[in-house]
Image (cartoon, rainbow, N blue to C red):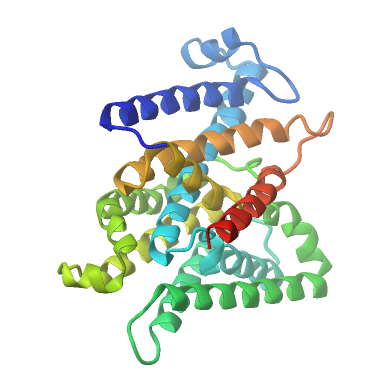
Length: 333
């Protein structure tokens, strides 16, 4: 469905309202339900009570992280699909998820650390290395970097990193116990201090995505047409890769490898906003935040009395969506 500018702006405003409501719901709902009045009092009449402390030190950081991680993964997926011209692309295509997971597992295995800070920084380093390797491999040899080369390089590295990660976890049971919850993708146990440290990288990624949103439309014209229009495709592609690494790498560093957000959300955004990436990018950001907030709320009620990792919920709903996309693409071809 295509919309004119007014309808698109209205759609963004409605999404913003929905994200705000989901944000409030993330603070209120859980194993212990918190009344709306208590939420308001925790911010405007804080009295140091246990309920107010839970709201401000546990529920609020979790909701903020869900918004930032969901929007970052969605925008990263949006850029990946534009650059690779592949409707089934996502941050996983760059090997970013498993590149980050591999370095986090290595840190746990060799350093024996259980610190979330160490997991975060080692996984961010792994995401950056994965992005650099994909760029180098897709640029090697004769000819310019192409979407096919990007897909092949990213998919190959993703399989390699996944195999190495599983191998280390099998050899070291302690690392498996330490990493199991993080590898599933979770928002629990994260604090605002970690988010503040990674916020500059997320901010740079968002600014880069906003600046490149107009250029993302050029990829749909094809390489030769874009170059004939005077576009510096290599520079644009490198900028997009850098933004994807910063956004997806930071998101994985904070919450672990949460799948399907980067794959599914851009498709929903295109259904609502049309084919103009100047609108698809902000729609993706809000939809990603909304989807992860909703999944995190749902993760608290799937099993009575306990929570499951939010990555399990996104995978549960994302897998059928992936099958639907693959079938639709096959029918069109």
